[in-house]
Length: 119
Length: 112
Image (cartoon, one colour):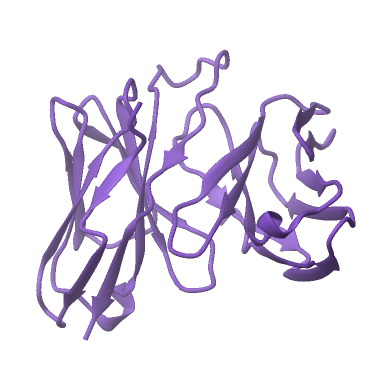
């Protein structure tokens, strides 16, 4: 039973470039969330995708965009990279449900992340 | 915005000792989660809590969802060297959100 997989594991870019990170959710999961983790900090929520739509967004600029495919995998795109975008980008998957349903909460499971370095 | 205050920031203990860490918030949460992150890896879920007052164990780990719904603690009993890592608490404000809010992490070091 494969867990959450992310690619690539490491990436080096320069300022102004664009990057695409990929995530395959855990088997049986249909919801994907993306987080940015700066060194020495806890992860910060970027956005969540469910049924191929962005369902919720954190406090990140429009340079950060995403996509979810019919097979539930997801991409995170970042345009016009800044030095401050250097971080570990984590993908988390969970089993989606209609918001408001309190029963059978499904926790998010994380991949090992993509380490993005901006030069 | 919502914030989680996690303490202590770091701990250095002797193997066999018990450990306790906690998270507090100014906001009410309906879900508390505890994760452990090793270097070069993503956070791994340890315990999930969904009801105020809930006390849940996972081996030597025990976590509780505070009655006020604004805090949670994690205890590790009889620590071993492989307990080394960074422990994060995370919470969800309501069932109408997919957003997890994380604490700053507690770095645990265990001396054999």
